Image (cartoon, rainbow, N blue to C red; front, side, top):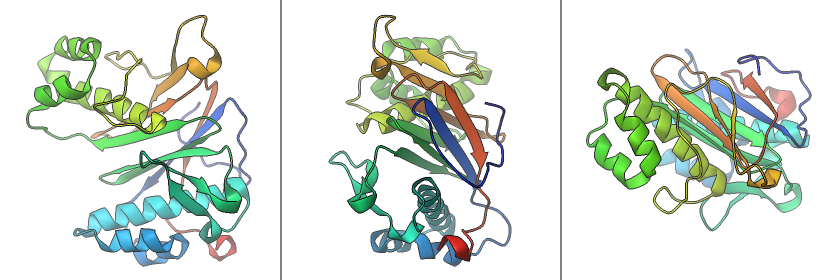
Length: 250
């Protein structure tokens, strides 16, 4: 893991590998309508429901980038990919392209993140901003150990620490396809958060009972985290261009 890079044209994933992509959704001269070609009908309808242009553009670019990248991993046209939701609302591949490839998508402010692996994964990004009643929120969704660690953080760092904890928690929830209030959290929280991947699990547990957690590098003012349901030993960080796939990918 050597920071955000431009990948090779051909994409492949090994069983112990995960890829995480970042795409800016606020680049100058973005024509959001050019991204719509890759979306399914339901996604287009959902895009039209956004009241604010920034929310609509973020959704359209993130979902179009998802289909473009799925197309590259599966070597199929993005628009032909069929997606469905699990009973818990987690998106997954369906139809003729259903496979072991797992993915997660997150969007906040000017950043979208997408993660891919052969195990269940979750990714989250949040724009750091003041949150009213953050302590009350923490008491509802964080473990006792995580709340205590946050309480030990200096007041000057507490907002940044809250979002670091929140993105770690949200990424875990996305990985298991659960809800914030119902999902058991086996992960520890450290502050300052280490830069490298951390693996949690009992020493005698099988790899499927381990969790890999990584703080993701982000522009100032953002926090992001990645969680994988397994001992992921190789993690690639890639940049997705802030433009739609060219005609050869359609």
